[in-house]
Length: 144
Image (cartoon, rainbow, N blue to C red):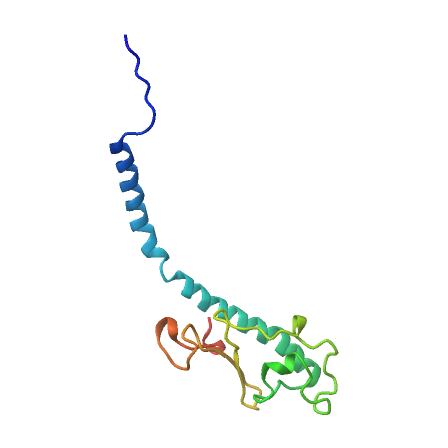
């Protein structure tokens, strides 16, 4: 009796494995496409809320008011007016004095209507005002 040694896979076996991997990819990839932008949208809401509930609230506790729109979020890094804010924290209100950006690398828009209503906004993926779907502007007041 002759014994033959088998050294590898046949072409048919390889083709079957490739087809199976292709079918799995065809089922999984469509569910993953677009999830990155959706995750960034949720992250921007978390970032805006933590900025509002952390540094902005601490600023208000120390100074009795939120920064004005013109002072913006820069007021959390350095005191914009020592006479207006005599109780300003010596270290500022941001870690390392860095003003946070949205997940797309754009500065948050800060609006204070002087009635104590503060709004934070991100321009979204397109970095332009307006837009729809994944390019829509995101407002803290609309975050869930």
